Image 1 (tube, rainbow, N blue to C red):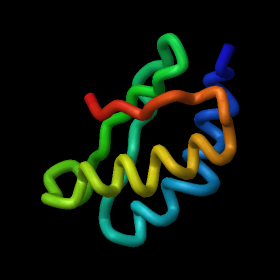
Image 2: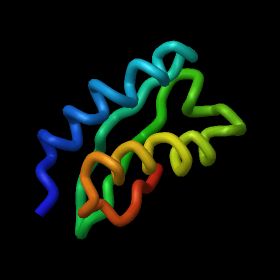
Image 3: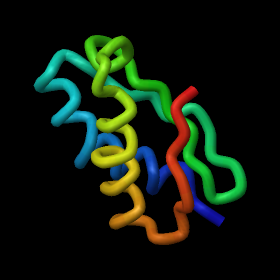
Image 4: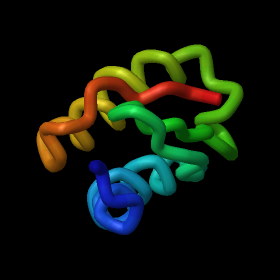
Length: 75
């Protein structure tokens, strides 16, 4: 089972600072069956590159830190 606190910690330490530097943010919404559900906020929420940020940035970092994660989904 994927621990929500561990995911939140990785987001806070490794992902949030980078998004914040571009005026964006991220909210951890839920974790279900090895899928992490997040919402990009601020400048990242409406950015045309949001899908790439989600898959190539957020998902990659989370999977590297927590191999049990299969996918990161935007809600």
